Image 1 (cartoon, rainbow, N blue to C red):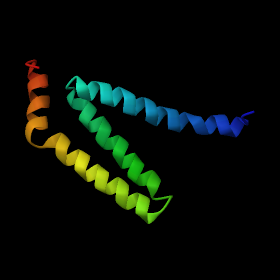
Image 2: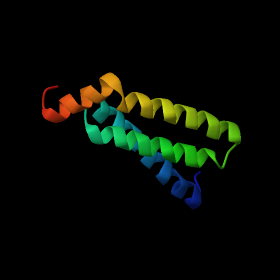
Image 3: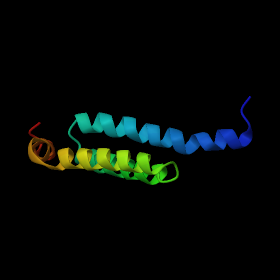
Image 4: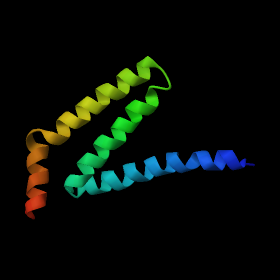
Amino acid sequence: MLKAEGIADLGPAWTLRLAAIVGGAALLRGRDWARWLLVVWMVLHVGISAFDSWQAVVMHTVIFVAITYFLFQGPSGRYFRASKAGVA
């Protein structure tokens, strides 16, 4: 059986999961705000991993940099600009 404090701990975890699902779906639809939601989501992961280990911080930082680079450069940048203009 879950204790009351165990249930309270589920709130932030489920909120982050929901943000990931909503952000991923919106990302596939070309919504520009979804890129920023994913960036904020990854920043939270880097921050949370600081309480775990330095290896987790390094790994999350590497993933964050890669995701941010690919979301804002080259073809993906054009994809989101086209979606914003109503082309895609």
